[in-house]
Amino acid sequence: MNIQHSRELYKEAKSHIVGGVNSPSRAFKGVSGGTPVFMEKGEGAYLYDVDGNTYIDYIGGYGPIITGHAHPHITRAITEAAQAGVLYGTPTSLENQFAKKLKDAIPSLEKVRFVNSGTEAVMTTIRVARAYTGRNKIIKFAGCYHGHSDLVLVAAGSGPATLGSPDSAGVTHNIAEEVITVPFNDIDSYKQALDAYGDDIAAVLVEPIVGNFGIVEPEPGFLETVNQMTHDAGALVIYDEVITAFRFHYGAAQDILGVHPDLTAMGKIIGGGLPIGAYGGSVKIMEEIAPLGPAYQAGTMAGNPASMKAGIACLEVLEDQGVYDKLEVLGKKLEDGLAKIADDTQVPVQINRKVGALTLYFSSREVKNYDDAEATNSEQFSTFFHSLLEQGIHLAPSKFEAWFLTTAHTEEDITATLKAAEIAFRAVKS
Ligand code: PLP
Image: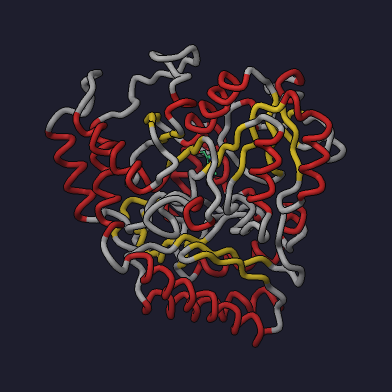
């Protein structure tokens, strides 16, 4: 495949933009290097690069593009928004309409606020939880990504009940000491953290179905026990549903799982591809926020008409009957096909899938937490990734990312992907 123009653009990008990219994972460091492909168009399930190559896309914009690229209904909404002027700095009825739509779909949201990214949404839920409880510390789970605000760029300490250390330069030790990181699906470690710091814990931050070390579901009873123990300790439960909201059904993962948080952070899909974040919870907790309460949060772009219109349009598409059934059918076909080829080529893999989101790990051990995911074979993933890319199938360039199916993918796309995967698995084996 000729990607000469991408190579030239990447070289130029590196002279203007740090590392040549505006988000680190795009730089292919997670797949032993290579040239990131520069795209110029997306339509349905396909991406088109600057050299005239076509790709079946499984990145989905890192999650938001669940209806496929340039979905006509969403494109129309964005065009209308552009024509009506994109920012007024005043309230609009679109904000009411969208807030109501989210509340109707996710019952734990009695009140919501719109922000501009998942990072902002999570960051603010932490502030609100601290304001509400009058406590400082949070607990989070190892390997879960919650955006790039200081408090969540903290790595685990030396044991489950130890305070964290900075996971990024620029995050201070004082901040890191406000965070305890424990393994997902490990209730004993969680209990130890609560035993050690329970009186000072404001909240636990949970991806109810993990999307950031691949797709990992909670063990039966894990989330229920976390909720119970957290509330017993007088702390709040925050669900980071930035990946999971509207991913598996029309609503949030919490309603599939039947376990409900005090606060929910969202992003990605709810913006229909435009920048967005949102958070919400009970009236009592949300009224901590300015202008009603003492916890401050604001935003020039928050609730902007273009993101509101794109988000409403995206949810309108997802409300249609059969959307998630289709994602399930495609997801299963992909999972079964990959499992068969892996078996035929004798490459040990684990496939974790929920509806249209799937992770293929090169490992013979089940993946239930971050340590399991980290122990999977990076070299084999890199070989597999590059072989697929060369054949016009674009996965996200990291063994920890999910493959995201969209409603625009077809059975033929899956068949083509599996055909390419046969070659990729043989490359891994050799
Ligand atoms: N929370 C989760 C679970 C995420 O996966 C991400 C981004 O990948 C974020 C928060 C941060 O969202 P954003 O990139 O919109 O700031």
